[in-house]
Image 1 (cartoon, rainbow, N blue to C red):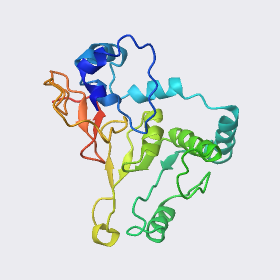
Image 2: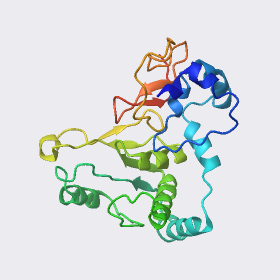
Image 3: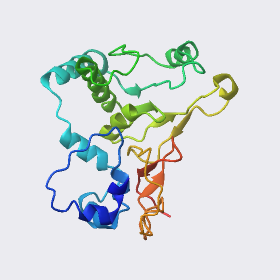
Length: 234
């Protein structure tokens, strides 16, 4: 977590490249670091399109991936008047079994599914290809409904530049079945789930709004402890 301190960053000024592997989207916290803020504001005047620009620049699907995307799109989606992408991840299957969730989904829309993986297989190349195909196809939809706390869903709606509807964590499904099932995202940007909480000797760091007259950081709609970028107006 010392990585996010300005004084620590000074030690890295002479390092031309730093490779960091993570499944977290930690870009929002750079916007509350004084050493990065001015340059980031210049590069990204629209704070709700940061991941979309960076993701489309960095993601370069292979012919194998894009071939699957194109075939599925042409077969099932190309002629649709409106494409609604639905990404469902059940974090607590003992409390929310598929037998309760799937009938509701199938009764309200026609569903085409590209893969049936069942669970995440980190490091499995074939599995990752299928996941990337799903992400790209979701990003081609007109409306997206994704699961709360799911980085998979974050990538899809951020690439599309769409504000998704988040499926709320149902927890005890029977007890919460009358509560709103979805909440609309304020911004298309992904959530940074596990950001630092310590005082970094800067007034900006402890403030979820990023400090200053133009706040750009808010708490996530689907995870109240997380941070995300947004074009906020107070």
